[in-house]
Image 1 (cartoon, rainbow, N blue to C red):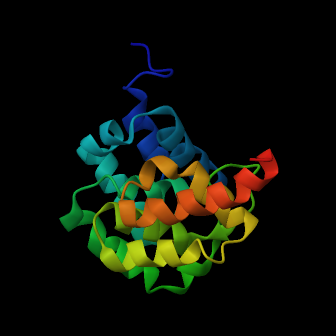
Image 2 (cartoon, rainbow, N blue to C red):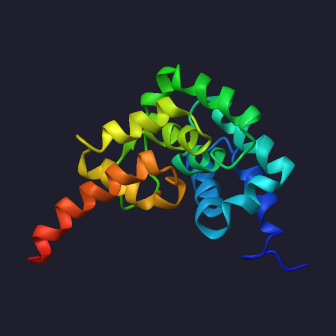
Amino acid sequence: AAVVGGEAAIPLLAQGLSDAASDNADRAASGLYSRFDPQRVAANKATQDALLASIAAGEPAAATLLLAGYLPVEAAKPVLERFLAQPASQSLVRLESAAGPIAARIAAQVALARLGDKNAMLAIGDLTASASVAEWQFLLSAIRDINAPRMLHPVQEAWVEEQVPQCGI
């Protein structure tokens, strides 16, 4: 049975989320996030459980947090809210290895906003007013997850304000 790049790889990568070596867990999360449709990832019950367990364990990868935004609200929201109340939400994570680190809480807030949490939407909107370069890199890399107009408009406006003058328009 072919697994490389196929949908059969989803549950195998999900098993990697619980790897004791955080680098391996991060790579598994990144593979799920970057190579597969997040709706397909979230459709698998074992993968849902693995994502939630990784968040509940306290130091999830940015990709794990973002994928939680595609899980059923009733399952993901309480786990994400508990994570935000922990000191681990301030730990630094990266969505892409070349990007600067951001606080894990930002990824959790993007996931909560995707699930319809208005406070998280406002927090992401507020972040755009003072975001660092690393935070902007993250927001732009996670643009597919930022689907709420209340969050997307400030991101678009700030990007236009930044890019248009550089283009000479």
